[in-house]
Length: 100
Image 1 (spheres, rainbow, N blue to C red):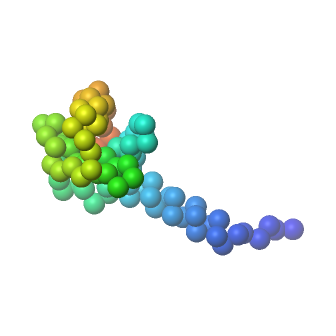
Image 2: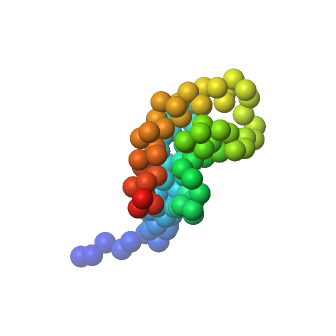
Image 3: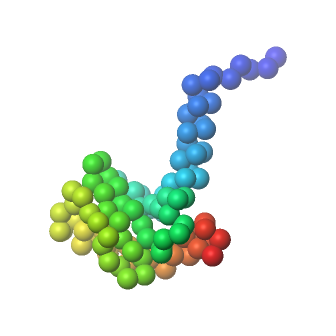
């Protein structure tokens, strides 16, 4: 006997798959998600950081902050240290994802 699929569960699985493809998350650190978006390919390598209503974008090669919203100076220092520690691997992940 074939088990009937739960439509709600199926939609949840599809949403999760789409999010993994469209929003590759590189790291979750203390609740901060470091990610890039599938539509970011034409831009130089960078990472978006999101947590709650806070967000920031940092260029990986120059380590310049493109924008930030809601983060304190202290939080950004910590986040920039995390980026510096991972930036070479993340540039590699960027290149792999976008086929460079």
